Length: 86
Image (cartoon, rainbow, N blue to C red; front, side, top):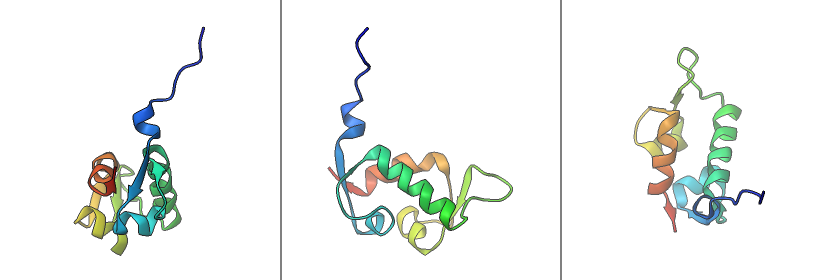
């Protein structure tokens, strides 16, 4: 049985804009790595809501990206699409 192929759309390098670049760096990276780096940032600064772990409390950098003080972890994918150059 052949090995499963990685989904090329998820592995295609994307260039973060200035706001996203402050969190994940400015170099082109795959969408999967952007999500990983977002979670590293969220955990590093203890931004996950204490009562509802699915919600993320924004600091100054995340407020620039999401335009609000709190967002759902499920909003990360949509935010990536709006903040990268393909």
